Length: 506
Image 1 (cartoon, rainbow, N blue to C red):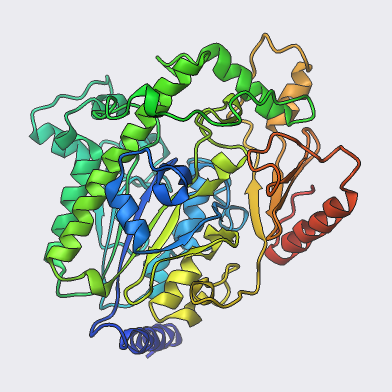
Image 2 (cartoon, helix red, strand yellow):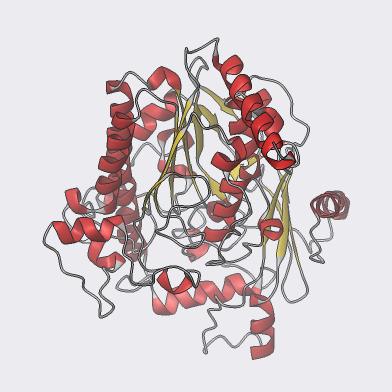
């Protein structure tokens, strides 16, 4: 046996033994992992996070059975970078996925590869957005692709003409592609009847996987696109405009001490709206928000179906259930839309973990999704496999104990490709506007409620006292009254950067 094979054999044996030992007190088999996540879902789309108005009974029930992280943050508030951390336990600047549509390196392991336990059946279903979208990879034996719009980013050895499982599902139901490329657009899919939309499709695929693998331990990731744009679906009328509570910071003017990029984005949305949605009046925002809520309800229905299948197969007591999202959405806060900014609505995410034998409770300490992989490895009895990862297991925190790191760090790696620079914005030169979109940010959130966002040259930094100003309407960075706090938190950022090999100068 060569050295590599011997290491793999020992690793597999240790994992299998550890997992069995860890789980023996609560179940006769190794724990299943059901990992459900969405795209662009704010925390306050559930009652446990303060919004009882959205019709989401299944999510609300799951929250009442789970450990709930009340102040959870993504690693970078945009799809690919955030997903790369969720799947690998590495920072975007470390794994290389610093902006959208950068493929995750084939040699960078995801959770199933880290666990490397041959007893597990593994499947990935839904949006991936980490390269080679519809092809099995990274330790997942089964793959149910859903998004065909990323084919131009496939590696050269992939078949550009291959289509996702969802594409074939629509074909089988008599639909014809609505684009000249022979693909179904997201808008077309979102306008289908409920039973033919993406959430129901994923629900049926997930239920089938659970039924087929009820006698074996499994890892099942189900990633819904919703409530991500195009911000409409079959449940647009599920909520009335009168039910919608507008963001309390909707009319925050974003003074000139706020980042220029944010102010440019705000003017872009005011001028251009979002596709067919104007965003000028309160009524415009209410209409868009209620559609967003309808997408959450659509996901809720399918989450309920998947959890029902767990119960039906007698697996609820054998399964760790995670529910989260890759980032939030501004959805009217500061009159902004989508993500890519450091405000709470963009960078915070819902995070529930239901573990058999653990009671529901709320955790107020800020936490980061960089800790997702170490936490799951720990809960699955393989804590030692997280050695070398930058995050920490939050299992002790879930048990009422302390963890080593109590500050949360967030990064924004400038892309330059998402510039929204209205020609009518005259408060800055073209060079200043471009520099603002080329600025990177490093943020720290402290357990005592302070949030510091340090920008590279080209845009402004921010400081917020979240305890007194939870809606971030007063940037205190240049007030002259909080230099000691700025110094303290800047030191924490720079110490973190040195620890994780981040070379961006802020």
